[in-house]
Structures are given as structure tokens and as C-alpha cells.
Length: 327
Image 1 (cartoon, rainbow, N blue to C red):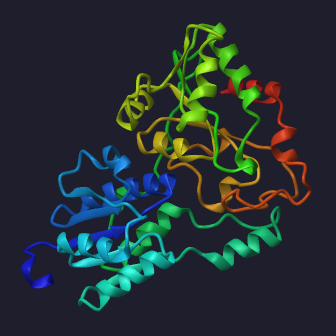
Image 2: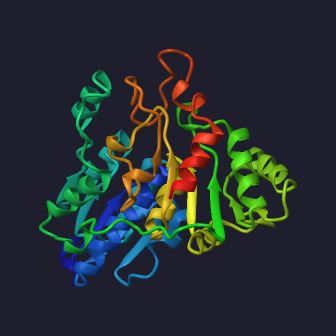
């Protein structure tokens, strides 16, 4: 397989989650630009293909992770890679990378730092910051001898002083521990719109769209980011023209970061120091309460130990609004 290629071709595996794939897009674009003689392919969700555009030696190979492993393996082999980088390190990608290894391909895989994560959860407030995920992805690719000097964080994404003309609001998160009460974010949207700011709402799925449609009745300046069935590419175009995105610790934070848009993010059970903060985002733009129990979860999926979710419930509209005003 390898002998038939004139150029090195690195096949990267990352099937989910959307935020992690967005982080991977930043890393792979840097490696592709800094190594123009190397082809890079990310096997992942086709929905995010627009994030991988603009660099000639980088493509996204759409993969449906629900398909049988044999079908996925055949699809991966068809691109004729010379190297395989597992940026996911789950059972499914372990089996795929092992099969490709036995086809004669060199393989590297992501070190998730599970031990460091466990130590952080045992001592939340006293633990040091973990290695950012983009650095872990870069280390996985560096095992093949490739370098990406342009990946250094450099300056944070600048945020211009308000009042802002276009603000995005992404009020939803997958887990309750990452979800600020939606009614409070609706108030934030209404206040911004009453001051003449155009507010664009981001959410996916039928129920989220239904809720956000109700918000649009509050003020004519509040609208859905993607209306009339328009898809993810439309949402990215809207994000790319925002002054700032206000979001949870969610995929939208990473979409905006990948496009160089400043983000004000709200954090509860999770924490920026766990390694999943937005690329080049100023850590001072993370809105969070200082609680000894935080973080209690790396991904936000664990239920609150106290059952109160005070990390989110105690964060008021006034506190968030004051934070917005201070930027």
C-alpha cells in the first residue's frame, strides 16, 4: 500500500465529538500548511467538512461511525494512506488502527492523559492545568517526525470593545452540568437586542430549534443563525462575521475558535484548565464561579455530587451581564 504513494499521506481518525473534531481541524490545518509535501486526511463526520477547506493538502473523509467496522476499514484503505494517526483512542479506532498496522502502516495514537484527569477530579481546586487537547493532537502527529511551528498559540484572539453589532448565542450543551439555565440566556439575548445588537441563535435538533424560534418573537433583532433549513455551512458563515460568540463549554465555542472569533464561554461542572478550552481564547473570557468542587467532571456528563448544580444555578443574569459589560 505504501509503495504506491509518491507523497506521505497521513490518515487521521476522529469520529466525534463535534467540538473535538473542530479542535483537530485547527491542528491539521497548521500541519498541512507547514508540511505542503504531505497529504493529510481526517476521517470524521462529514457535517464538519467546511472546517477543513482552504488548504489544498488537507481533506475530510466523511465517516458514519454507526457503519460496520469492516465497511469503515474498506473506506479508509481506499484513500491509500502511508501513516495512521488515531486522534480518538476509543475501542473502535483502536481496532481500525490495529487492522491498518497489520497492513504495514506506521501508527500513532492519542494519549488522553487519563491518569492526570483522575488526579484532577480527586483534587479539583488544587490540581494544575492539564495539557490542552490541541497539544495532544500535535504530539500524536509529531511521532511521525512532522512539525508544525505555526501551531504555537501566539496572541489570543482579539475582542473589540462594545457595543457590538453582531453577537452569537449558543445556549445549549449536551449535559446538564454544562448547561446554564436557558431562560437566563434568553434574558441576555433580549437585553442585547434592546440595545440595538443583532443576536444570532445557534442550536441543533427539532426541540432546540423550537425553543429558539420562540426567542425570536421577543425582538426583531433576534434571529436563528440558520433559517429555512439551511445547514451547518450557513451557520459557519454567520459565526465568521460575529463580533463575539457567547456559549457554553460546547462545540460552538470550538467552531468560533477555529474561525478566529472571540468567545465568552460559561463554565459549570467542567473547567478551562481540563484541556478543552477554545483555541487562542483569552482565559479571562471564561465566566465561572470559584467553587472547591469544580471541576467535578471532565466532559460534564457526571451528575452533580451535591445534586444542586450550584456552579450553574448560582450564576445570575446580572453576573454574566456585568461580565459582558466589562469586556
